[in-house]
Length: 112
Length: 113
Image (cartoon, rainbow over all chains, first blue to last red; front, side, top):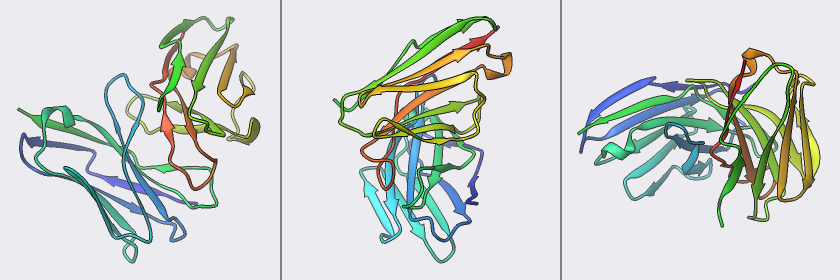
């Protein structure tokens, strides 16, 4: 079955710097890749997603890139702010499947 | 309205108690999900309802009993839970069960004593 590996497990950056979180998936049939942000005491919030027919997608300070050949996808956050501090989860899914396969999560800390 | 609303936010129960978790959405979504999340782990799928019918049960113990009374409501009935069932229980919904974005509620933090 599908497996999603996520790195790093923790990331500490200075406010204003960029942050990059990387995920690798195993099932080449996966074609939908969302990213979720989870703040303490809250549920995961969908922040951006990408489908396999697109290589890159951007929404203000966040962007996701996908390399289908290498089966890698990454989340890029520019000009980080303290409110970006949270746990970020990547995930992968096939169109035929009900099930999102999550990565293990990255705890991002943005230092003021 | 783009929210998935879960009640209660916190719940403490004994191993002999019966309790229920409630989830509500008014986005017209026809797929609803229950996930379980342990501390510092990703969410784990428990159940999927599609058009009010149970589509997926991820081998969840029978002490967890889901119910979908209508297209807006999802319940999770709890009975004879164990301390290891303590976790954050998340409800989610999607327009359809496949090919669609998944939106989560804020969860119910459950403690079993």
